[in-house]
Image (cartoon, rainbow, N blue to C red):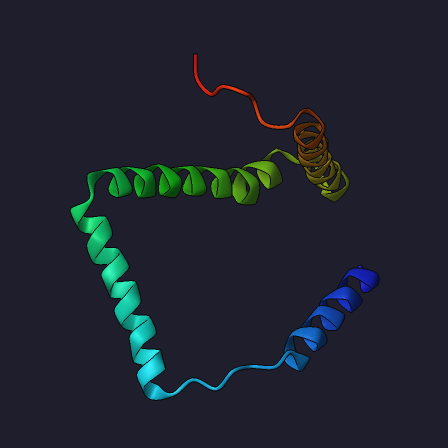
Length: 109
């Protein structure tokens, strides 16, 4: 746990050392205006709304599964650690297998 905490401090130090561009008040307002324009576009476009709805629903269900479901199933912290490790291992295997096999030539049926 101490090593993990140390890696977070190293990461925080490197982020703090990264140069930050200065933003004027006009640039900050333009970012807000761009966000408003994007949300307005999403409000007018049915396909974008559907994608946002699906992504939002999947994120809510996914987050609930791993933040509430797994700790509720775990009998103790060791079991929880094993479940999270198995989840990470599954992601690693999936990523490596997708890298080896590549994209399909044809999507769909």
